[in-house]
Amino acid sequence: MKKLSVFLLSLFSIGSVFAEEQLVELSLPSMNCSICPITVKKALEKVEGVHFVEVTYKTKLATVKFENTLTSIDELISATTNAGFPSTLKSEASND
Image (tube, helix red, strand yellow):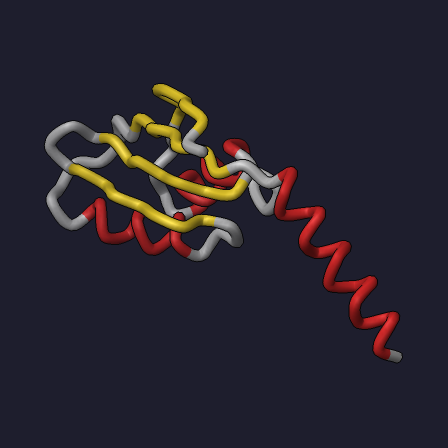
């Protein structure tokens, strides 16, 4: 049993070696009030693998830091769209 536990832990460790944290900016042109960012932020924070979200009404942008092995940019866009605020990718950068 101990060997199995060590083996399973090593598998999880290997997976995290290949995981990469990414930072993206999503454009949210349909945000039309100062309360909208709260809804967008909550929707993005519910996505598995998201570590940080900042949504700004003035610039109509969401900055999202996430683990690319747990989620994707398409899933982030789906989350905002399902919350009523369709988004598009504005910029992408790897954030090791």
